[in-house]
Image 1 (tube, rainbow, N blue to C red):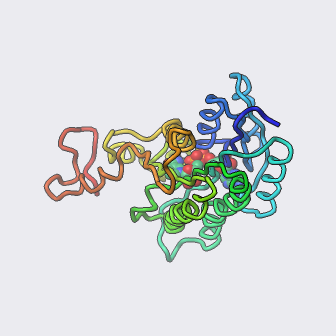
Image 2: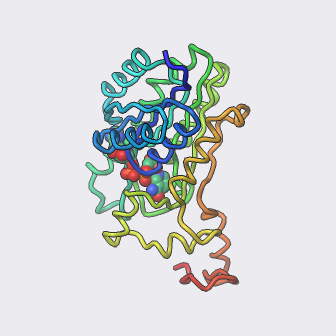
Length: 272
Ligand SMILES: NC(=O)c1ccc[n+]([C@@H]2O[C@H](COP(=O)([O-])OP(=O)(O)OC[C@H]3O[C@@H](n4cnc5c(N)ncnc54)[C@H](O)[C@@H]3O)[C@@H](O)[C@H]2O)c1
């Protein structure tokens, strides 16, 4: 059995999951990078090992109950008891309206972003509860609390936040903590490809935050690292925004006295 704390990061092959896998490995965890994209997952494992850390790749499709159950069985029987689960496997969505949004895409967003998180928690949490220790961090989004033209994505993230609160209370007596992070606009591969395709305006994403910048995957990884650490041992059921101050800036900039422009920044267009 491993001498390390064992952490499983779904979606660990890219973006927020990859930064989290690196952060947890740098802190001494044995990190299981679980991703549907094998070469991306294996690259992360190689990079962690090259810098002296411990990591293993395991394939998973979080949309499949059997695949997640197999992952949990495999990790627990061959690697060791899982202390930390980070559910970062997810997909983004482009702006749309209810009439033209393809129902198959709607269902796919829910299958991965909500049901995938639900299945991941369902596979790992009971084992943690039996051992009376464990920590789970789910990934929400500012679109969970603000209306955006992301008609499946936003509701799926709101559901993730609700699930996080439910599980925190259900599993609290078993010593298992369940929290979430709520990233703002994070410059990951998924986001970069949308910027490249003209589907997101990077100036707007940065300019509409308090700090005037986009979030880096490493910023979110720090929040996740904290929530999984003993420093957060009395914190459960919370959703930690890591958004460069996007949420408070939204209402501030929309004050009718400002006209959508930050009074002390000239790098920004009016908020439409
Ligand atoms: N990028 C952002 O601005 C942003 C903001 C808020 C929340 N999030 C959330 O953060 C999470 C990670 O997003 P990201 O931006 O890092 O994306 P990403 O595309 O960079 O990484 C997502 C990873 O999940 C994997 N994945 C996708 N479907 C999978 C499946 N069915 N089974 C297993 N793995 C699968 C991908 O292969 C990829 O490695 C998602 O839940 C996303 O909704 C992202």
